[in-house]
Image 1 (cartoon, rainbow, N blue to C red):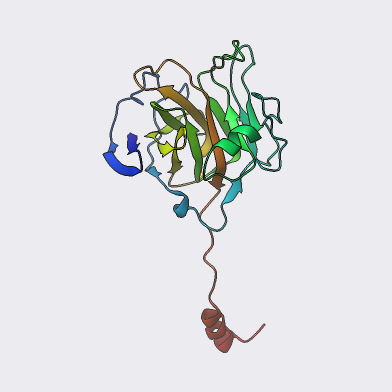
Image 2 (cartoon, rainbow, N blue to C red):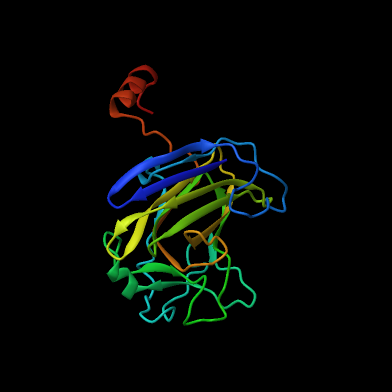
Length: 241
């Protein structure tokens, strides 16, 4: 199954509803864990996250201004591990304050800049960035920022490395970038790893750098608070203790 969402300029229009697919339709084989996980997965917006969701904005890190000379984003946050799998390991995810200042409508000062292919770092040609969750989460999302004429892809996997779902989006024009929100939710907390990538239109094999911010995730459905009226009714029946 794959969700395609296309946002052009300031207009957002759904081009395709979820459709069944034999693979992820991006030319990549299924995960080594074998096939796809039979679970209902839906795309979500930031408003779909509950009060128990955790938001990471990278703003407490030291942001760089020249490529990735700021803090590298790795294991600073409990339960999360950010990385860019590559051999050699020359690609990184880093806090960048200069780029953060150039992007409208993000939490300043920093943004998480992900190297996938960089002229400043010619050894970096990684297929994707990734985040590992321990324990797995129910849903995850992020604001993303890409260069023009490119698409942003989010893939989710179980702890057994089975592909759960692929979400591909293209953002709306936001200053000198395309930006939007990419989020996905499973029916239970099975999302153990996500792969994130950016590709130019018409060239799915060329890695592009990208940026993310306000990374949000949720482990389970948030408990519904009990209203004062309900507490009052309970106390009247069972007493105040």
